[in-house]
Every structure is written in C-alpha cells, then in structure tokens.
Image (cartoon, rainbow, N blue to C red; front, side, top):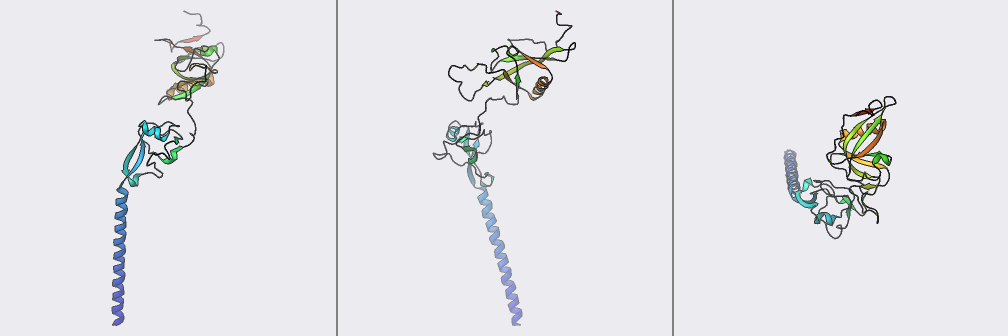
Amino acid sequence: MGRRVLAVMAAMVVGLLGVAAVLLYASGADARAVAGQRPATVFVAQERVPAGTSAADAVAKGLMAPAKIAAKGVPAGALAKVDAANGKLVALTDIAQGDFVTASRFGTTPAGQKAIQVPDGQVAISVALSDPGRVGTFVTPGSRIVLYDTYGQDPNRVTRVLLDDALVIAVGSTSLTPSTAPPAGQSQGAAAGALVTVALPPATAAKLVHGIQTGTLYAGLRGTDTNSAPGQIVNNSTLFNK
C-alpha cells in the first residue's frame, strides 16, 4: 500500500514539474514575442547615397534618416546612430534608396569612384573613332551625335544611319559628370583620345555593339532639329544620285 501511494505521489510531482515547465516556456515565448515587437532604430536611405559621402553629410542632406521598426525586423549590424565616432566615415559603395543602412557600408576609403554617371535605364557603350570620325575635337560630353555604319565588301559596300540620336556622356577620360574637377588649364569639354562613350537604351545598345563588330563607324555632330534620314542607304551606285 505504501509503495502505491509513493508511486502516485511521484507521478503527481512529475506532472506538476511538466506543467511548470510548459508555463515557464510559454512565459518566455511571450516575452520574446513582446521584445521582437518593441521599436528599434535603424537608418534608412531616403535617396541614393553616393560612394564617398560621409555618414554625417548623408544625414545632414537628408539622404538617410532614422526610422523605427519592430526589433525583429532590424538587419544584423544595422546603423542605429550617427555621432562623432562614425560621422566622418564614408559610404564604401552607393547605397540605394530604400535600403536599410548597416554600419559595414561605411569605412575610411570608398571601394571606387564612378568615372561616369549612366542615365537610369540606359547602357554606356564606348566606340573607338578616328579624329575625323568623331568630328575632330568638337564632339564633347553632352553632344548628341549621329552614328553612320559602313559595312559589306565592294561592290556591295553600303553606308547608312545606324543611330540617329545618341547622347555622348564621355570622350576619352572626360565625362559629362566627372567625379573630380578637371586639371588646371583643362576645360570640361577637352577631348582626351578617340574613345567616345554614348548612353543608349539596352535594345539600341545591342545594335551598336553589332555595328562595332561588323562595320566601320563614323560620327556626325547633330544640329537642332536635324533629320538624319535613318532609312537612306548609300552605295557605289547611288553615291552621286541627288
């Protein structure tokens, strides 16, 4: 009889311990859930933060600002404050608008500076042209040009307009939006070499790449309201036609 009573009492103790463990776990889970919902501060990029921008300048210019989000949504290493200790650190790469800003995005030396700024949604393609083929030194960053393509073999060689309006964003090492000021005595429009870089929509860029590989390109500087006759084909037999 005594053994039976002891077994019953032991079972009751084990059951009570199990209930206590469940209650403790549930209480801990509730505490963790509450902690995960508590607001935490993290900086968010309001606009693109260019590489080389200091954290302090990015805040001062409104490029990034603190935001309150649930603690469980804060990314690891999130930047929670900008102060004297980190304010002079600079963005190592561009930080896109809407990104959570982490402390690792800032350091002492940018990973690299963009030589040119490509318009959104476009592709930069460089073309090697002779001096006459780029209108001497008169094609400069910001110019709009026509690109002619001569292809084929005589007597079937033809010339026609490949691109009737292309924006030049760089000539040699001189760009439309330089990352540094030009050297003393050199103007922004100075041509440095015969490499002309244009910005184009992706589909048009593919046409230019094919033209570079298969023909000889020649550039013309566009005037206002120029009609470059994209459909015109010139060959040996039509060269002297009016």
